[in-house]
Length: 526
Image (cartoon, rainbow, N blue to C red):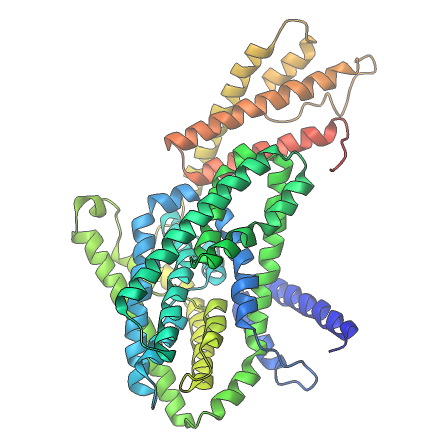
């Protein structure tokens, strides 16, 4: 394609993505579903390029930044607290799904080998981070449930891809089960080690950077700095990205400036928005090509309908059965698990939140050329993605019927206020240690009266005020904010507040510190 035409298509693609997503949110529709529908319709329009997602581009190019953007915004404290539930879903449920869906697919698809059927099971096993996060945020689910769903979708990609690699090896050769288990352990250990190592190293480097531009530039390549060495060492690059993101997100209040944290948040939200929504549009644009491949497989329309129904039922049944078993463990298992308070309504909600997306559609194209009915399996993967996206539309109705308790916003606001008051007290105590008696009394009085908001001394100075007054205010207030932030981090370490309150107060302090710096003497960006 001509370079100019390519640029035109890219610009048009972004405009369509932004417009469709914005309109969908405005009318309350599911943006992923609408984008898939728009892309599917456009795929049959003459002149629209024939789009085919290259699996390497998705898995190695798009997935690392998407997972990193999600992981740095995910609470490490909450994930650690719910690690048993997340592991049961991200590892146990994936393996169970591979077996159940694999056997069902092997039974109904003619001439399909068991290894290829298990490979397809690995393809459809992982849930989609983007869709799950969007739905969880829109439905106001209990915070604990949101943490479990987000943690599952972040980590199950690694399990599914390791299983896919093992089954692909079984398609082309004979494999040893012990070798598969060894590969899985190696992938996990190396992935976690590389993620922690890269996170720790970058934390040291970023702590020395005072420029938001330099810090942001380093942050943009962080997903690949974790992904590439992990893959090179035969580990899970995806797991390395997630671990590095969780670690750096947790450490950000102590290693970055306020401006850098604000810039990073905005930048990654923008990148995440464009990539995640563009991917769903890409999925729709692939429909015409996928249909052509499915029609050439020799499987009739009637068989296709039956096979699709069986696969979807197996997929849902695997998740539902696993949630029943998991809930039974929590309800009747050891006391430590019973204390978690995992309920049957929670299990039903999780059962209906198994939405598939870009990883499924990219992974199915990794199947080797010699795989029986390869093109038909690609079509089945597309059916699974669309069907589970439509299933997500029923979640609001299901959640209302289950009557799950929504977050207590009044309690959360009260927590934030108490934590902010605690931080302000620490700031005022710190101010007492900094006062020498030579400061202008108006500066000290303003700092004491208003420990949070910027004093009007910067906006409405008296004509007789000396220039050192606002400088004194800026200097002392910055010092107070540092003490307040340390108090918040100490409260986080002690576990006395929910992570939502901690993040909100830290963001509040960052915003004020950034405003103070912008009101002070100007410095070069680099």
